[in-house]
Every structure is written in structure tokens, then in C-alpha cells.
Image 1 (cartoon, rainbow, N blue to C red):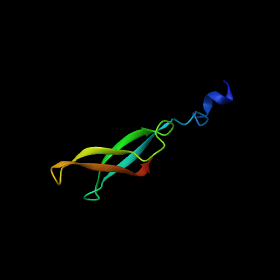
Image 2: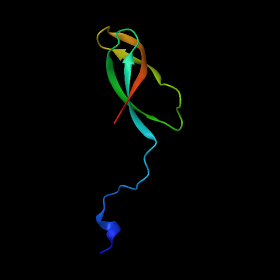
Image 3: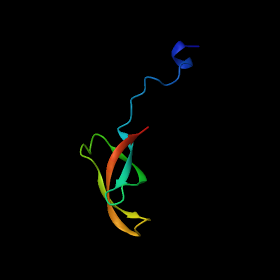
Length: 67
């Protein structure tokens, strides 16, 4: 049995997709979590999403990177 077969996959390449939180610009609540490709999208993500509190579509911006 080889030594490298016993160890977990610690040396694998880290993926380009990361989890981010989206915050509503009008209420300030974080209601959505999505993924983005860090290589293709360097700017902060902005999407129009539905806000259940206001019951309408509002602009949501990327605010934090999640694990």
C-alpha cells in the first residue's frame, strides 16, 4: 500500500467557484446565497432578485464570501 493512498485529498486544486451572500440594497437583509466564478467575474455581483418583505424585485449586491 502506498503512502499517498492513505492521506486525504489535501493537494487537490481549489475550485474557481465560491459561495457569496447577496444583500438587498433597500432593506439591507441578506436573503440569497449564490455561487460565482472568481476567474470570470472579478467585479462585485449585482442581480435583481425578489424581496419577500417588500413583495417586489429589488437590486441585490454581493457582500460576503461564504465557506
